[in-house]
Image (cartoon, rainbow, N blue to C red; front, side, top):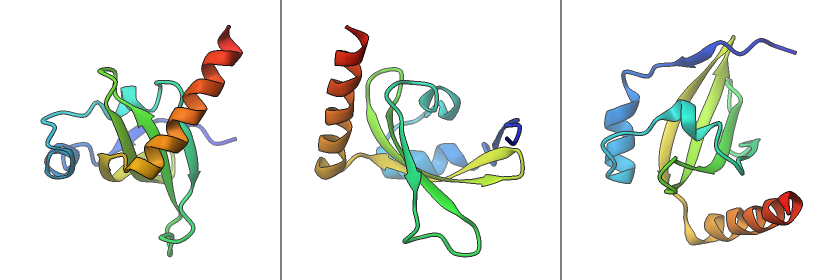
Length: 103
């Protein structure tokens, strides 16, 4: 298993995130550690570099769709935006399943 060392390209993230989500800040590190977090391969948009997408939420509860790639031992966020209705439905089902497990 590879060692994960952090995130790359963080200087470019705030402006790109703001354009897509109208949010001044997005703590990418916290996003990836909130539960539930759904991560899957983005085969449709992967080319030379394999891409992944994640459905998750910020600490304030805002639900986001994030596209990222893994580069050596770091993760680079490519895009972030609010979840679409379809993705929110998928995420809410996972939240319900997680809450039943915790009970």
